[in-house]
Image (cartoon, rainbow, N blue to C red):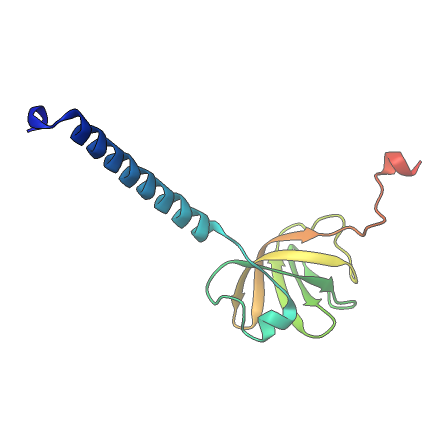
Length: 135
């Protein structure tokens, strides 16, 4: 059958095949990108149930002063955006910049009203200078 196709028909068939292949690749890439996308939410959005249930997301705000409780490597603290608060539980070593009253971003999932973090990132303030530059 291919031998009875004219050169123009072969080019059209090849072009159609390339368009289909490009579409399939684009769909696969988009699907992988969407499943790995992690959104950021404030405590107000989490309390308003705007954050996804059963999916990983990031929460950001300030560590509420007086809320940090440590039991070995288990740490619990409260993240606030000055309007609402969300309790956070984390197991592991916290970053050196983690302090009460300072900014924090945690990644994990909400479980029964408590944000269970798998990763905690501390944010430094805009006045931060490396020790070498401060001298």
